[in-house]
Structures are given as structure tokens and as C-alpha cells.
Length: 375
Image (cartoon, rainbow, N blue to C red; front, side, top):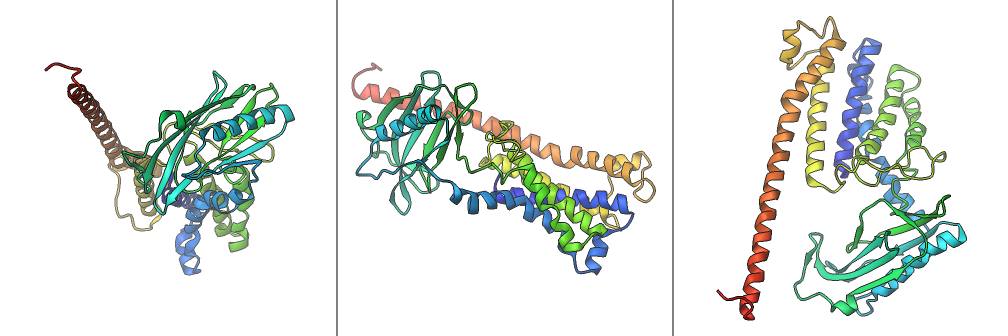
């Protein structure tokens, strides 16, 4: 997910912690915090919700060391060099029984232009395939029509001997910014495991780090109800980042140093998906609003299910809260998400049909131009 989505997820997690703390301690922690000028305790959830990516992209990335770096420019493009280097690293990891790291640099042409190329690990045929693509413009990655290379200069393959385990995208696009890197690890069964951007989702994205950061709550507020609340806000806010990331492909290494590899993600979406980020932000924003109303001494809205069952926050708070939350989700969170999801799916399907029809029409026109079709 994007940084803002992680911030909102951590903030939403913090509001749940405050609700539970109010149930446990029997007082209004937020009101007490405001009196003590410590109202920023809720913000801790958002801060630690974005911290895992900050650790990875500001620190762990620069601690990664590479055995090989492939750096090409527009005047010296060699896809064979890319394929050979990756194949060599795979076999070297197996033969020398050690981790081998490879960095693939992007091919930058100007301030907003890059030459795109792709890397594919064909694990069945034990080949690395590299294809040079078009010159792309800006972050929208719009290709120039005349920027493709001839086939004989744009394609290369290299074979490796070892069995390879690779659980990320079959094809990796190398285009903008700094480019990806790969780590190859020897496995006990004699195969080699490949990790995409290995410095990401390791120790920085772990349950262990959330536990280590949690005592900061005591440093800020002491061993008080606020201190214990901050402890849980920090730890669960940090874990919210790991959970939301886990809906993607890469997963995370949960318990370093006891574990050394990532647990695969649920593969339900992607961190860069606009739709997934919109849904996450919408859900978390509404949960924050609901929880703020739930811990407020004056309720600004009530849920009809709780009223129907005769539940009141002043007499049976826990039951009122659970029923009201379910009512809130069913009425206000799920319907817009489901409607927009199916609407977008329908639009994409229709757009796909139209694009296919357009391609068929263009092909027909091209054949007509060269006399291949009689009309």
C-alpha cells in the first residue's frame, strides 16, 4: 500500500486500542490525555504504521551489498549481459553454498525518459530471458512508437543448472528510478531461492520489530494507563503495516532472527493498485470516525441495530460497541466498496473487449493495405 494508506491503517488501529483501553480502565483516556497535553498519543499509530517502509527505503536499502551490478546505457545495450549475469549468480549460489546478490540498473536517457527492459525467470526450462523494450516517458511509462530495437538486438537467453524457486512476478520490468535487485539463496534441498528486492520486507517488516518498538510508549508516558495504551498503539500500529502489505504478493519475514525468509503474501492485490489503496483509505477513514464517536462522551450518531436491541453505551458498552460496529460496516463501508468494485470490473471488461476490437480492426486495415484481404 501507499504511505498514506499505511498511516491511516495505523491511525485506525490506534483508535481501536483506545476503545479497548476505555473499556478496561473505565475512564476516558483521550479526555485525560488532552488535559495532560498528550493528545498526540493517537498519532503514534500513524507514525509507526508508516515506519517499516521508512526503515527499508531509508536504511536497509543502503546496507544491501551486491556481488554483481549490471549497468547499461542507450549506446551500449546488451541483453545478453543481463541474462548471463543472473544465470551465473544462480549457479554460483548453488555451487558456493552462499547468498549471491545482483543489482540491475535502469537505462536513463534524459530527465524523464528511460529505456525499459524485462527479465523473466523460466524455472521450468531453467533459463533467464531478457528483452529490451521501448523508451518510455515519465512515470506514466508511455512508450514512444519508434523506440523499439530490432529483435536480434533486443532478446537474449542464458541457461542455469540449478533448480530455481521464484514466487514473485514471472516478468520483472526494469524502467524508472533505481532499478530492482535480486538475491539468490542455496536451499537445503539443493535448489536456489530467488528473492526480489531482498532488502525489502525483511527485518524492517516483522512482528519482532513491532515488539521492540512498543516500550517507547513507557518512555513517553511512563507505566501508566496512557503508557500501556501507547505500548499497544505502537506495536499494533506497526503490525498493521505488515498485515496490509500481506494482501500483496511479496509477503514479509515475520520473526527475524528466528526466521530468515519471507512468508508469501495472500496475493489478493498489489501495493500500487489505485483501487486497493482507495478502498483501504475509505475503510480506515470511516473506522476512525466510528471509533471517535464510540469513545466520545456525547454520541453524535447511533446505529439502528443497537437501538432495536435496546443496547446503550452507558449500560452495556461492549455489546453496544460490537453490534454498532457491525451495523456501521454493513450499512456504510461494504456497499460503496462492492458497488465500485463491480462497476470498475465491468468497465475494465468492456474496455478490454473494445481494445481487442480495435486491435482486430487495425490488423484488418494493415492487411487491406498490403492486399491481404479482399473487401
